[in-house]
Length: 567
Image (cartoon, rainbow, N blue to C red):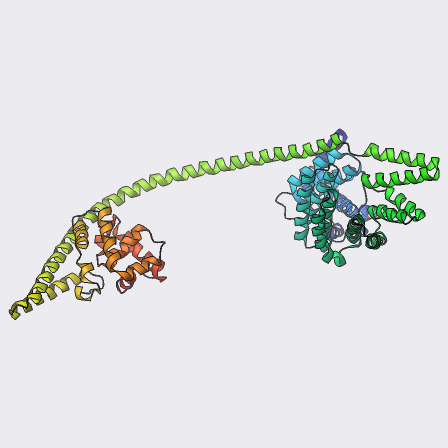
């Protein structure tokens, strides 16, 4: 922005500083017009035009009035070169902290500056508006902003930047839900593809436009038909091009339609109508269209020998060239945007790093506190665990002792039965002793079942590696890898049901597998705790969790024991 504009913003801001906070609402008519600008700019303009003095009771109303008025005028395709009033709106909304309206006002200020050929200031204000609009949920604002940035970049010819903002324009248009905006966005994208001669992409966009054509407004319909007419004209289908371009020109006069209609009439040797169309196209705001029309008119004047008209048209052509964007200016506009985006990225990165640093500091404090608390708790748990270990050792020693006695009795009974000894009274005596021992062993089990009811093959329950684990538990020693490997080999060989269960649940951890096998083999929880190095409570929690994980049921450790032993 030039120095005069900057000074004006500062002065207006100073005047508004005390007034902004005093008015919380706007005039109802202005507010109603604001709600119409996105979908009915003509209706909004009718509400406001000529009523500024009666509607504006203070600077707040004036700021919103100028924003809505400028927005409606620009949406209707009319230029505004006087940016003084919209500058006041920018300053007011900036002072009030109204980010959404400030961003909207910056877009309109940029369009005014563009209309006044202040291109660098226009692009700069659009980039400021883009940053201000970040985080605002206003699809119509984002549509206007992206469309304006794409329009500015058409002057630079930078395809990547143009397509970047055309895609943003399309995305915002789709979020508005406006058929007119969506159709315009697809058509704008198609125009860029036509500029770089990518006809396949052009037609892909046009195929998106065609279903929307009947519901779009007259201006958008004319733009779409003009694009299609130019496409068919380039392919040599003059009849279809003439029909589409004529419909576009009649519906809502478009300068490109005028230019191409003039070309068609000239090809048909209807020079009077061609000249009329070219004169209409010469007034285009797009330099390429204006230059092409003026060159054709100059050639026509030269053919006629009309030197006066030729001189007049040449002066107009020179004036268009004088106001055209130079290569240096286009490059500087592209560089301005890249530099602004780079600086913005640095600011965002710095802010992110500051937030991350703060979060890290808080996390460190929390971690230090947690570690201190954890250390105190672990010290307490260590003392508890030591006491439990003594108890577990005594309990496990008794269980192992009884298990070994049972094993010896069982073997002796088998020997007596195999030898078919005649001493029936001895067999009965040993049988009673074994039943007594079974009852004693049943006391260790949570389901109070004696060994004869354990539903387990002798070669599993009486295997050497199983009793080796019982002995380890009885002396308070954790099982080593060799012991676990022997246990796994035993179950893999003789327990097909358990193997099938594990095959269907591959997400079990090694510790969960060990707890499952030990539970099935009737190890008591205290033994499992010692062998796995877990606490008794952890063993209980693991069994309850395995009930849900393996059988999909909710319940406690006892339910898990019942299910795994009943396989």
